[in-house]
Image (cartoon, rainbow, N blue to C red; front, side, top):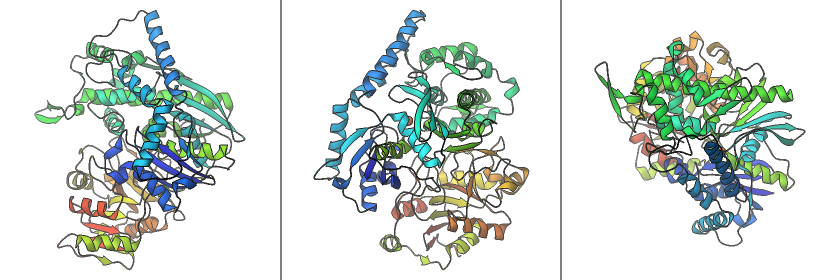
Length: 603
Ligand SMILES: [Fe+2]
C-alpha cells in the first residue's frame, strides 16, 4: 500500500512516503522553499518531491495520513483547558494583570483544526500545487501515537516502552506506551496543559530566544551554569513551577498559559512576577538585548544569573523526564525505550536518560519534532491497511539527492571553475588537513535537524580557535555555541565516556581527555559532546573521509555542522550549496565527485 504522511500548517511542515510499510522518501518543506522552519505552511514541494522520487502519482496513493486527529482535537483541548481553568478558580488563585489571557492561540488552533476546515486546507494545498484527478482520502491519526509509531517502528525493538513529550497533542502533553507483541497500550499521560514543552519553551522565550526554534540555545547556555551549580538558588525556586519526585512531576501551568501575558505569549505575567520578586534584575529578555558586564557589551542572556536560571531549567527538565522513565520501567519491567516528540530534541536531557540504570537500550528518533510525526502517521495507516510497518533507521539521508549530470549542469550555469575528483575522500581529507573549511554535499539530504554527512560543513577540529573561526566566518552565529564531532565507530571508545550507538547526534556524551586534547573545537564547556558515531557499513564514504583525514592529522574526528548559515535552512540542492559557499568563508565545496575551490586556493 502507498501512504503519504503529512505534517502541515504547524511546526516544520514535512512529508513522508511509506510504501508497503517501509520509508521511501522524506523531506522538510523548508529545504525546498528556503524559509527556515516554514511555520504554518503546507508541505507542497516536499510531498511533490517524495512522490516524484518514487515515480508515483498522487492518485496512486491509497491514503494520506495526517499527524493530528482533527476529529478529537477541538473538543478535547477545550475541555482540558476548561478543566485546568476551573481548578484555578477553585483554588482561588489571583488573576494576573496584563494583556490577553493566553487563550488566543488556543482558540486559533481550534478553528484551524476543525475537521472540515482542515480537509479543505489540505485539498486546496494539493490543488494549488498542481495535483489534478482523484485526491486520496485523509486519515487522521492521534498526534502522540504518530510520534510513538515513528520512534517504535524505526527502533528495530520488539517489546519496548515509548515515551512521547512535546508541546501538546490533541489531549496530552506527555504520553507513555508499552508495546508488547506489537500492541500499543497507553500507560501514562499528562493532559493539556501540563506540558514540559511549554515549560522549556516558556523559558526559552524568557531568555530572549525564539520558542519552538531556539530551545537548543537554552540547552547550550545551561552548560555555562554547571560550574556554579552548588550555589544555584533556582534549583530550589523552580519547585513552585515544576516539582519532581521519584516517579512523577507536577507542573504549574499558570506560569505558561491561562494568565495575562504582557511580555510574551509563551509565558504569563505570573512567571515574571515570581522570578523578579526573587531577583528584580532577572526580567524577561527581548530578542538580541545587550547588557554591560565587567566593561563588556554582551548578550544579556550571557549574564551569569541568566545562565544559572538556564542551568536550573535544563536540570529540572532532565529530572522530570527521568522520573517518568523510572515509573514506566518499574511498572512494566521493560528496559528498552524509544523517545519522540519535540522535547527529545534536547540531546543533554536524552543523555541523562541514557545514563539511567533502568534503561538498557535507547532509541531517540532524529526527527523527534513534529516533522518526524508525518512518518509515524504514515506507519500507523500502513498498519491499518494490513502492511507490516517499520524499518530500523540506519541513516537519515532520505531526502532529495541529485545526479552527477544535474550537479554538473548547476556548476556550468553558475559559470564557476570546477573539476572532477578521482577520489573525493582522499582529496577532501587533504584540504581538511591543511586547515580548510569544506562544504560537503553527498547523497540524500538529511531527515531531522542535524547534518550527518549529506549536507555538512566540515573542518579539522584540532585547534580550539577553529570553532571561533567557523562561528565568525562561515556560520555567522553566536560565538559561545558548541560544534559537534563525527567519528568512526572504531575510535569512539577512545574519545567518549559512554560511546553507545549514537549515529544521529541526538544524544550527548561526555568527552574523554583525549577528545578534549585532540579535537577541542568539538567539546562544550561542560565537557559534553553531541557525537555522530559512523559505521563503515552504513556510510562508507563518510567513514572513509574521517579515516583518511585521521591518517593525515592523527585525529580521526571531523568537526561537522549543518551546511547553512544562521537563520537559513540546511542546503538542499546544488544551487543552494553554491550560493551558501560563495556567501561564506568556506574554502572548498565538494558536490559529490566535483570540487570547487575559492580563488587562489590549490588542492
Ligand atoms: Fe508533536
